[in-house]
Amino acid sequence: MSNAELPEIGIRLSGALDPRRCIELAEAAESAGFASVWFAENPFQRGVMATAGACAAATRRVRIGVGVVNPHGRHPTLIAMEFAALDDLCGGRVVLGIGSGVAAAVRRMGFAGDLPVTAVREAIAIIRTMLAGDSVTHRGRAFSVGGAQFGFRPCRADLPIYMAAAGERGLRTCGEIADGLVVSNLTPPRSTERLTSIVGEAAARAGRPKLRIVQYVPCVARADGDAAREAVKTVIAEMLTTFWPAGDDWPASKAAIVVDSGIPRHDFTAALDRLRNGEHAGAVLDERFIAAFAIAGTVEDCLQQAARYRCAGVDELALTFAGPRPLDDMAYFARHGG
Image (cartoon, rainbow, N blue to C red; front, top):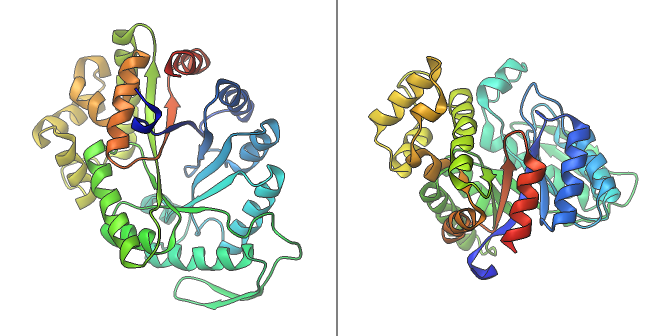
């Protein structure tokens, strides 16, 4: 399979991991030839900025992506400060991912979060102005800033800023103002194709170039493909029970994902109920869930599945090498994946 048929491959780490483990995995990813190391920051887990900085200092080549941070927990001026410092540390390898955050978690943090797209749009404008070295005064619906300006020259004025979005308004905004789109876990390739189409059309209408698309996907790659597919079911089950709403009253974006997965809603709901009642993932989830939400199997299987995401418009896959042996799985993937 040629490189043109595949997205770039990076790895995804998160605040769920011990920072020292993240450093070990980042160093291994660079040695194995992966393109990037992304850090997902979720509410009430470890913050990832310190870990991203440590991994930036421990590596020399890989891109360091952080996605996504939200402008509620961190004011846009603070985001600009932190990412300017991180980009200085690693010599201009950083990508900033920003999104409105999980609404329920934002409210638990004490923020209203009632203007999600507006908040992200205003935040990006503030951050970009500061990274350019200019003074910013902003009086908006979400944020107010008076004469904020760095006392130093940032490493890059054009540090890439990606957005995370799933709703149509957010996707259109992404196409109009961002450099890329971060597509989250639990997004099947058909959904990705739909999201990238909306972003691409918005960018074209705004006279902007094509945005870069990065997607998070869990992965288990092993010489024993059947064992890999069984192992990834546990990861899918954890994500579904953590991030999917209980009951049958789903947001439109979740309902669309189920349609795009090809799994009938009745089967999807039944699987969720069984998982939440304690049944083992291996007995509940079948190949349809793996095809929709993960990459798993031998390296040949994984590359074929990665090619599906490339066809859907993905430029870069950030793989979460799940399970107890990520270093072995990463080495196997890199050794046989070319």
